[in-house]
Length: 337
Image 1 (cartoon, rainbow, N blue to C red):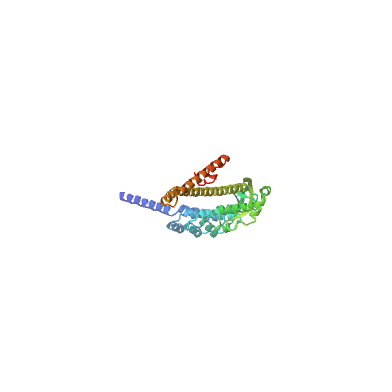
Image 2: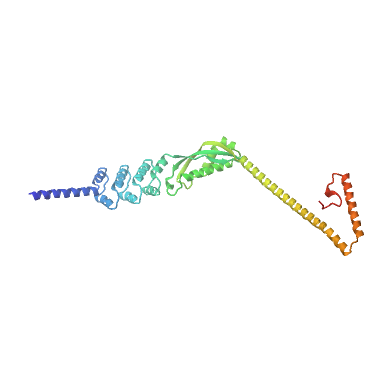
């Protein structure tokens, strides 16, 4: 009898373990919830999800939600999107929102948008409720050289057809900024821009800047406009300074060349004076040689001495008669110090 009680306890334990494993591996509670919501899902389908390493609640709960919203989705569609790495719950919420707003959106496109990395639910919400993108201050220079700064608010609506492969907000802001700069730059003066800022938005909006983007631009409004620097005057000032520096450099170059030429002339004069002094130093030697060789007599030397003395006397008289003459200006003193 004791052994029979033990066998009964062992049997009860085995049954409890089997039921625990069964309820852990097979989401019976989820299956019951699906049946209660009117969604027919086989128990073996849930077991197959476990074997394929799919969390059944990530597929069945969005399926229940879709069936209650009137969407005709299947378990295979949601499971395949989950296995592809998509967010099943977000896709189903986007489909429900699009269905309520009468926006045509298929499951395949919604899944493609989600797998492309975009928030498909946010895109549907933006299609219903447009989004406002505010640009930073964008500076442009009018033809009169005055800088004008403008800030724009861009109202956009998501274009679901171009969400896959379409450019984002950064491209829209860059294109609008380019249009603002171009419009300001083509204005005759900054006053016209300040008087009619709506011309900026009208010109930019007419260029079709939303082409190739994931958005549809509804309106572009200038939120703020301001005056910046006088770029034209600053450029003229910089040009004048540059011209001044060039002129100063050229003048310095000419001065340096003049100084070099003067130094070269002085060097030549010094060289010529040195040659004269050298030649004068050779005169007594030549006279001595002429006396020794007999080419010059004593009488000739005395006459030459008298001529030199007479010349010196005349120079002295001339200097006393005209004190303004320098030593080099007197006759017979060229090249002497």
